[in-house]
Length: 313
Image: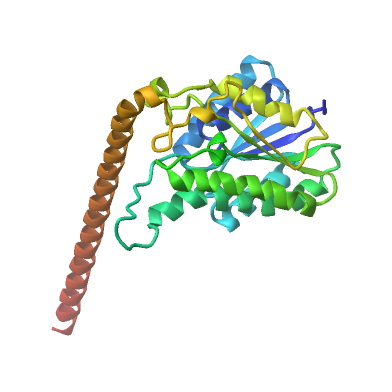
């Protein structure tokens, strides 16, 4: 097992449940520093507070920092890793863990191009991971540590029929192939692996958990992920974690137990409706903000015109 006491760990999607779970385990291993990165500042603030308290309670020397960055934008994730190396001198372990979890409605009964929501969902996993690898690999190579690793969070759904959320399953399958095709391109000494959990009982999955088989806790999932970290010879490896053998039971349309698929369908459709309502509300808010801005601009223009007229008089 590698020695971790001098290691610096960088985690994308660090504000989410699995990202926090990974950080909690790194704290137990007393690494030098953990940098959690996320697109959501509120989630980051909460994560830093939680993880800092955990480090203090465990008397761990681990420093916990956060950097807000959108991993789908190369300049942002590159800047976050640049800042990490500037602050700590090196980085040894990078978790490419960013990615959204939401259902995307698709209608193939009429001619239409894939929606922006489709590509946004896909790229939150694929593009964010690709950007992270391109920004991280050269920096890991500069570290003098014996062990350096980029670990991708994929999913067991990458090898299953997941048609209630195609861009998610397709993106996760693409992440597996990044490992297959990029491992030999990495600088010497840098490992690349991917770990794909089955269902994990995160807040996003909680409403579906009663209808799913093989749901694991975050702690169980993190423990399984660390088997790749603890094996310094593991590289070019994609592990799909399905200890209960439930992948074969994934029902073609809704990915759940066949005896509860009708109820699962109701839950998923309810979630889709809720998401659509939220999107509509966001669009309405944006339109209202634009209208307010236009009104303010018009008022400013009128005031300027009045001032000019007064000056001329």
